[in-house]
Amino acid sequence: MPIFLFIFIIMPIAEMAVLIQVGSAIGVFNTIGFVLLTAVIGAWLLRQQGLATLLKANQRLNSGELPAKEVAEGLILAVGGVFLLTPGFITDAVGFLCLLPFSRHWLAAQALKRMVVSSQSGGFYFRAGGGRSPFGDDPSGDRSNPFGRQRPFDREGGGDIIEGEYRDETKTDRDRLDKK
Image (cartoon, rainbow, N blue to C red; front, side, top):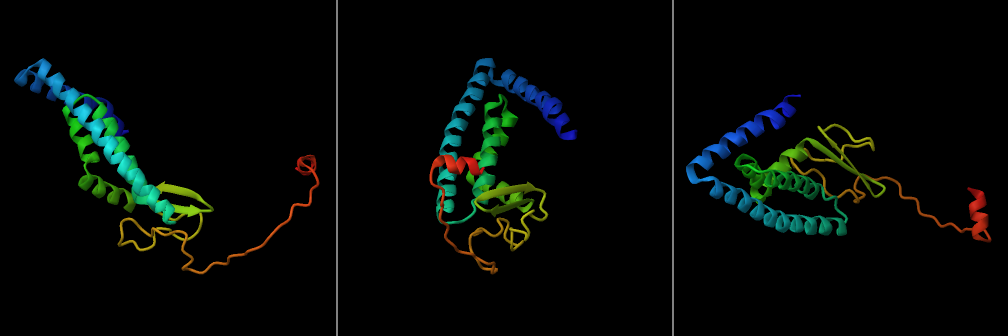
């Protein structure tokens, strides 16, 4: 409840107060111009940083690694984009912090300390707050690394791999449908 109070009551009041102060100092049209300029710059930064993060995530997936850091950064970028599209200087400052690489990396590291990311059978499982995965072992591995274990497809801990072949002996598609 306190976070909703902050977001929906305190934050708009603070934004209005700052907009009134800036508007009285530099004028209404200059204030509107600055708000629009920050939105345009923010959209450009969001596109640039979002594409870079997407490419990094794709590279990690192609190399068989779990892109947990990139997923966290993508969520932070989305939040930053929302803040930049919201009119006001306070939200713009928070939005730019979410979009700038050095602060985004730090925020992602903090988020991943509290998040469990696991992979099982090609699917991903995310849970905020830490704890254990429903798939068994804690996937984050070494807790000193804020991004946890990043290679879920390695077979370091053993585990049996059963290989086999099968042959479908149904004669027609209709036979396959009748078996279900």
